[in-house]
Image (cartoon, rainbow, N blue to C red; front, side, top):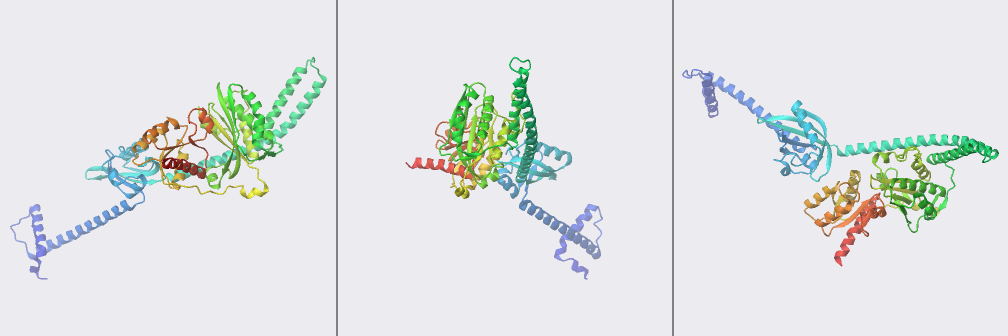
Length: 575
């Protein structure tokens, strides 16, 4: 190679760099380098440039891979400042999970946006990062832009960029998984409860049968002895006490047999209204004059098939419990009605059975029950009464009777708000009507209106929202009245209907309706509750004539009622 060729235009820059490097190293620049020396130095620089170019290319490729992974990941990825939590960047996964756009969050802190449902979760994250520099699989609760809570697993690490500590977080939504786990645990608990009740029932039935035999012997001998001991005999009073104790024990064993579903019964076709009416006078004497007994029979009631004495047992036990729950003056309501459940409704309500049922509801405005009492309500010998005031078999007896007749029970109660017991007994169907036993699924009309839904029970809130959205409605959901008022104030468009629970913490449904009506004067109102309408009206919560739907309700019933209320509003405006 001709050494003079080295001095091409492309090598001028390399020569300049070589001299610059030599100057920095303190070399003697007065000596004129040879062509060979210049070539060697140029080759070294070219190699260094190649290495640099390779590193730059690899760095660009790495940055491109990171950028691609950041923006295309289905998981939520965000970059925040460690010091104050301000967002530097987010990906599409964050938008999908939280509902915020990049413009919504960049430059703002997570605390300012109220993204952390529990601020303690962020404190745990920051503490873990400061101590270890990395946090993996931290389960946390987040609140999205629409106010819905999400459960997610978060992993994060600290990155040092431009002399600043940043947090790189990857978050995976596990809300549906957590809900499925909760539902599975709930079903497992229900299975355990059913198995426990079945085991106790078998035990109770066996003990009751054997004990009945012994009681027969005791009663028989006590009666024989009384024939030989008149009122003046010194053993007469003792024998009478033995007889009374044996009879009371016999009554208890009858309750055990009813709970175990082994009671000897004589079922026949009944009109539930006739049976209840024949019991009203006795019920009034049983509960006393301070308690107002209201009877509300439904017309054209379907017939049922069961032993009338079992209806008596159910009514007596429920009315006695209602009486004990009321302090001083109160009200007890007995109602009858007709109810149909389809397959879809029963899939979402464990314990319910599809078909046509006759409803008997007993409601009171007494002290109500908390969750702990409700969870143990039908267990034998469970009681909240003082010693000597009850055996704890009353509701267990009702449970056994209803199950023996292929029915089921639904109980709605809250502390201080009274209780409603709903007994569902299967409709007696003629052979010609067998095919009509399970109601056909009706397609209820939907709509596109906006509905403000308020319910303090989150499972019911989520389920009802899904029902409404499936029918095309836009839903603003709130778990508390205060949250509902805030959402109503901040909503930019119209709100066509308020659908609210009646009994809630902070304020009741009627008071909430007043606040919402002040903001939206033309809004339609639909109240819902597990209490009967009569009990709610007695408590002064609802005015006469307002739209009301009673829990539990099916999707068809709810959407039909919603459509009815909205259509009523439409008809009024067209007049």
